[in-house]
Length: 456
Image (cartoon, rainbow, N blue to C red; front, side, top):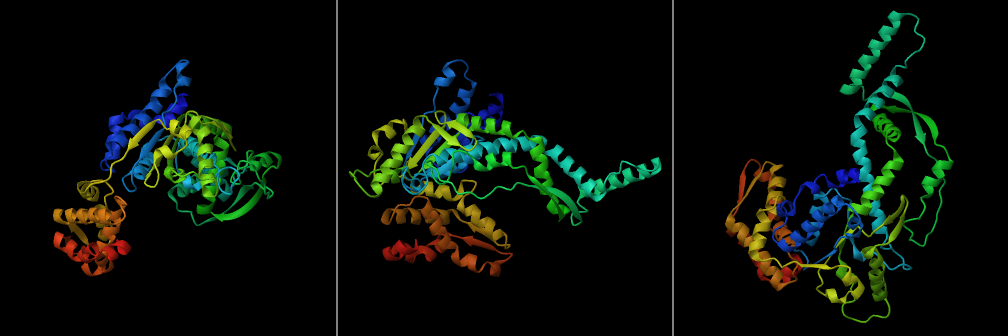
């Protein structure tokens, strides 16, 4: 468990909920309630790992349902969580899945993907531990390929000369002077016969990894290949890693990491809700079937993966949906009960649009400045211009379809179209965007409902 905490909690384990919210604030404007709920859930993951005794196994994650219109930050919260946490994290869309028996992916595939991520995280951690040793092995193999070490040197003087030559080659290899030199290396190739198998768990997965099974029966063949040193390095490096890393230990720790610290962000959950209609056929059957298939995952069940069996009872599920054509009560009651924490995200105001344009680290205004700076154009926005852009985007959301902050990207692209097209003509100059320029570029479109419907 110590290694699990070390891998899964290096960053989040050191952050309090207040600090996690502060990190999210750098990229997401508003939605304080959603940030607090997510921060508490993340922190509770680490708190549970420190609990001792029988109560440890009784503590279960409290799954979250985020409800709010499109473009208010639900998906962005998931993206930032994925970068903030060192826990296995996967974002999936509920619309990708179909009921077992229908053509498509079954819901258990998200757990298998989560396990793959956990295995990769543990392997990456192991690589960092043995990277220097692996590079030393690769360098030795390259030196041996360039100048094989002879066990029968006629004189001590010749042996010393050969040793000095090998050291010179080693120095040149480390400095990168011999990357274009050709060398012959032995490469292991695992020959696995092509097989097509079908499983009740879905076509995307077979309960037993046939590749792993056959690799134990069929030893790898070794072939000599002539490659440039720069091409031979990654091959030799992978072979060195395979010899240094305990694959069984990685598999065990990866499974444990996914089980104990895994987080699944399930987006577009509202799209599999019934929408208040009693459906007896067609796609409605599959949608309700997806909900029923999700129930055991959220409650806690076992899923077969190619690395072994994993249980889902300690995996945190964060679901999200706009619920504009349906409501959370349209979900089947059992699924509602497995999402006990409800967080409602608010629609964005014009003032929040204004903040979104300039405050976050990845704000649109900063992105356009960086893009045009590559052509030596210094782009400047007046406060009045930013205020006008936010007002136009907000008004368009009120008069047409409300797509939240995504409207800003559409408006900004239309505003910047002319400057982006003729950027080379302004090289070495400052281009200032003021309120009047924004009105001139966007007034006709924003005031014409037909044009705004199809262009903005």
